[in-house]
Image (tube, rainbow over all chains, first blue to last red; front, side):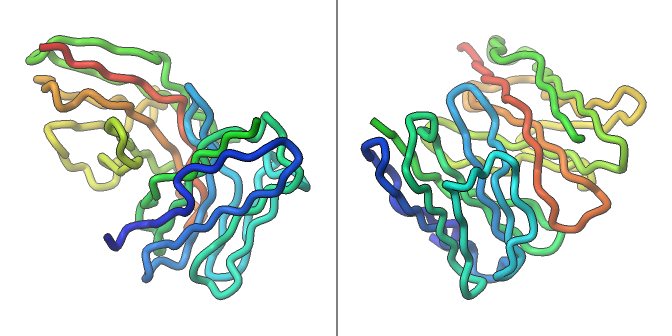
Length: 112
Length: 111
């Protein structure tokens, strides 16, 4: 499968713990996006990279959230001191130039 | 600010009936509009984009700048069209900028 890959598929954690998700984009795509989706809502933009540069961050991305794309390939999204409100599906997408976004299957986070 | 509105959370039709999923947007510039679809237990995938002006799986959508709408239509719905549909907008001026999604419409096509 040469699509966008996200790991893990599911993560259950206790409130206050840190979690990290990984996204491997389609190899020739230089742009990578993170979105969050809660039940009954459409995906909400979190942040966007072009190569290794983080070009845009949403106000939704609090200080507890950090994303990296160190070599312009895979990306990680870390949430520190998780809260129950962080429970959601975290989606990664990639694209090249003005082509549409291709999404991964997402990581479902449950904070207990 | 850019905003996408999908007024119907749920839409149910019978097989063979026409279907229209509504999408309205607000954006002051020149937008690109998309429809994404998510079938049960599958990833979100692109259905069509307005600049392609193509028909995918029998679906079409026309950008109406006067009414700021991008409704998705299909003349004869099929059971396999049952899915979640999201309308999305991207700034046409900024290459690579983010998509803004609507809240989605769950389409159910009954036999």
